[in-house]
Image (cartoon, rainbow, N blue to C red; front, side):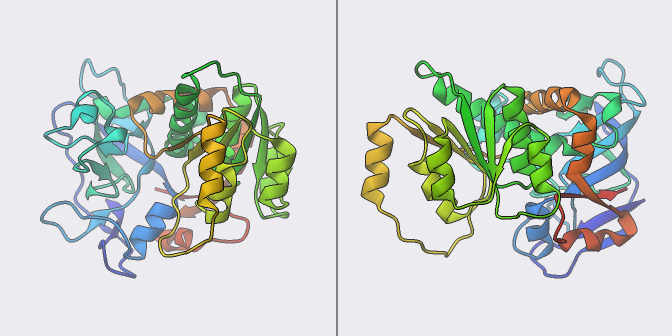
Length: 348
């Protein structure tokens, strides 16, 4: 079979090549790969900046945003041939920390977790793959063209869960949410915000292309003005920060209504320096009982939340998030962003 592979730590090593057909172990599903998504993490690995091959191997099968159809399932697994499934990315380490041992492997304390397509386990960027039944999640059949959005949706499902758990330390009834960034994570965060009945605002620097219309068609408001102006006008109860841009991060910290919650999901590049009034930030957070939380990855609970969110979303809107589909043999094209890209996927 063919698979998208890379030699981690080496630039320009991305290659579609023949790899052995997988043989399912006891308790595993055999899955026909349909589509794999491409995100910033994949591009970093392809540039040689990140990633680990499986032990004893030079190459890693890339891809953590998965979608496939079950070919073969073990008896009693809860799956059947023909089921549409996504595979979970992270696995707890063999000697799990307390969080991993309780199924909260997205909150691993010791860092010895592994991840499909990222860290020491082959990913889902192959024409056929296997996955443990306990790390597969079923999707509704009508999501075949958009189910690859599952993994990024888990990221924002967890982010919203974190916001609600932090807010629950006291009476919390948010009305307005601001999402910074209208990439796939930001748009999906806005989707889940509207599903919660909130007044949602999305900030992005673009004014052309598909993003403004995608936001407005959710019933949300799109903004392209400066962050300070948007913060002042909206006064959000919740901010989901999905860019990692330093100026947006720091503006968000002091821009919420009292008892606001800021959830940081974007990863900032290292080395860029900005000047901030640390005293003012501290004063604002303390005196208004604000909270700031970072959120990354997802566990099985978030995958099920994401599956429910996608199942109830407008299918035509989800289809518009996928702005480019690239065949596997031309997979390298998916790693060069185009101006109107939202989500780029590779057909397997």
